[in-house]
Length: 109
Image (cartoon, rainbow, N blue to C red; front, side):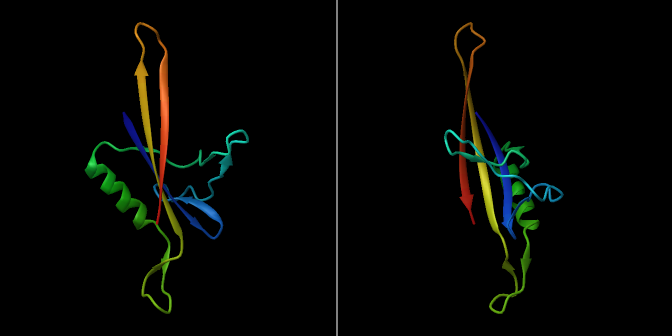
């Protein structure tokens, strides 16, 4: 099993990659048959262990847009989306058949 992480923000009607800030206009793609939505331009980074996951969270949060408001000295002006992709594969007997299952979990904050 392999886990991959993407961390993006929705800010001023654009999707921006928080793991690669230069990637600041990611397209949203919808599958016409299933209605599933994906962000194929978002950076995917393998999560090796708990420490690497925490580092990726911190990196993404460091790139989020924040500004002062009347109520808070620092307030997020964006919506962050953390996507964790679980890739599971199984080999069947002597065949070169590989079943790849992708489970994407979204966390909004």
